[in-house]
Image (cartoon, rainbow, N blue to C red; front, top):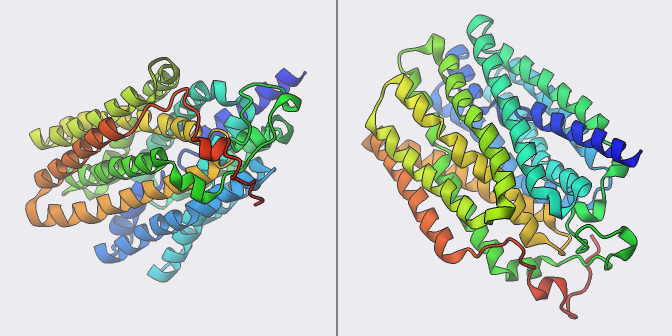
Length: 424
């Protein structure tokens, strides 16, 4: 009976990943188009609104990870978060000025920060560390499938009924997240395993060592964590601005079809992401994490160069499909690598929050600086600059980041007699 219940919880987790694909940030690419094409707001106002969610998300990541680590009701964090985001999606349309729209985006940004650590924690808590790689690949596969469905719906809805209806559709997707999370059983989630506090790797609860919770200074003493954090910043510094820049190129002089072009870019990448994510989950334990992560950096650098070799819509969308390779590899591996680094620390979700904040910082730098480069030197310079950053990231990761598969965390974290349990 227990296995049947766990299967039910895993099915619920599948559909949480499917429906939450656009609950958090999937509406982001359409928000700028809506405010520009429908509201006719100036670029400065649009930039403030879009940046508000990103900044709020970065600020909330570490507290969100801490909250997930210490919560024994993880599915309820997802349920309440999705309900808030659903209300926020409707409020996007109802808000009529910049201050109110900024307030809505801050609420969405703060709330959406809970989803990545909560979903990864639920997965780890149900399947355990030995099965996490395949589960992470499956989570990403369902997430990208949801992105494809939503992007197709959003492109059609925006073109036929108006851009504002995209946000009503996103609210419905958030409702699907609530229903799916409800199916997950709290008792199927091992909360010590979910925060990587146990080192038993499949042992019965009674046979495990007492969990030790690492202090923040212990985590910072692990240079692998700092190297990986820097690598994440470089990856998203190179990646984040590419899709918006391609969207700008495709939308020039085609305001009515702008949502359709953005939808095509997203769908092209997401269709590639589904098989790549599942394959990455299978290969991560066989090949190790490092060669796959390096492949993600290499594809990202190649994509930046290819954008400069053609400007036709079909060509640009085809190149954008390569985002499916790099983003899928990253989406699966970052959770797995963090679980490797956090093993035995009890800080899996706190680390996720910290590295998610680094991801947001990299994305902010990418969009902020790419805009200035493109304005001054043109789109080709912007794409080549992003490709150069990806190349720096590849070299940095290759030389400094060790393989984390089957490695234990530092002795200072897991076994030092001077490390006292932290009560949080």
